[in-house]
Image (tube, rainbow, N blue to C red):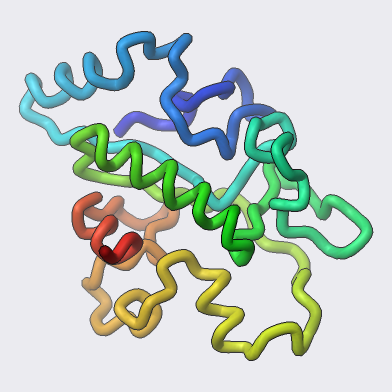
Amino acid sequence: MLDDGWFRGRRSDRSGLGDWSVDPDTWPQGLDPIVEHVQALGMDFGLWVEPEMANLDSDLVRSGPDRLLHPAGGSGRSWRHQYVLNIARPDTWQHVRDRLDALLQRYPVRYVKWDHNRDLYEGVHPVGAEPRERAARRRVPGGSPACTARPAPSTPCWTRCASATPAWSSNRARARIWPR
């Protein structure tokens, strides 16, 4: 499992989170050499992500600070120097989806560790702004019936992929998150 730090701009816990592309300075040949090495050892390659979070010092947030989930009149609270993305915004969700899809298409990632390292502090969408169920589905990426219904505890749904749970097969995760 290639953990935190593989993506562009990640030199500390204060930068880069949200910029989900391979850092060309750290990995000038991309992730291919490490993937090949891992596979040569007879192991599957896995990748750590936390795509619902971002640092203020990231290209994503610099391109639109309003992409962050925050109460009116403020940037909200940070925890571990990270902020929650407002993935109810179609452009923000599209960014997250496109970046992850590109990684999963480009590299033979067999396992994804989808981390969630901070709590959500305050509700930020006004009551009555959307019907509750529609709002919940918009806030949960890939909130399709296959994922939100949770037909069985063993179903590899990304909503259960936090630090304390095992990473799921990326092919299964991709099928649930990115139905085509």
